[in-house]
Image (cartoon, rainbow, N blue to C red):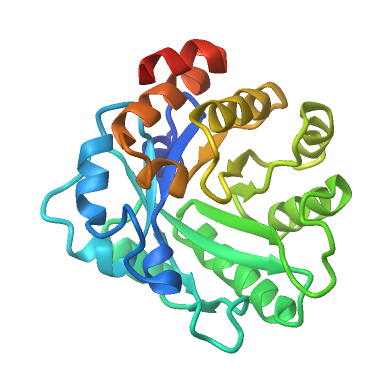
Length: 260
């Protein structure tokens, strides 16, 4: 018998893999390039291989029509104007996510700073509520704080990813370490699916496509790219190229032909 959790997860993923655009930046950074009109990004990209988006509740509530893709509502925020920009606070509840029609909940957790204990508590309590309501939980697990000298250190990334899984997340989003071998070990030691973050805007399209190919070879279940999609000159085309790599196992060079 299929569960509510499986039904919702199936809307977020396709064939167990994820191609997602996180668009929660409006609270932290305002209407940055590419997110002046987040609704248009969603509708423009949903037919090109996209499986889901991560959006704040205000964007979800103002969608002019239903989407064809999965919707994760993001419930942790801070702002670049704050004295504590790494301190993410809860901005919603799982019951609210259900009322909004979301398919999943997303939280951002920074590990390695003074604010870590508070965010770990938020993750654990939200995971319990998600499990209670059969709601999938994606945890954005970032090595970020005073005690983290190298956020791409494989041992640190492995620890941070494992924290997300151990606290009850169904999907862990984290940074890519930069090479297949080290990231493969992280995937193996994390008992839930891992997807990678895109980070800052890549210098070239081939860079972001190659990182995607390498991460998938390492065992990642997909990507969640923000600026590298919504700030792209042609968001639909880069989504289509990423889809070729994630779902058809094309190489980065083969996928890049879609951008020509």
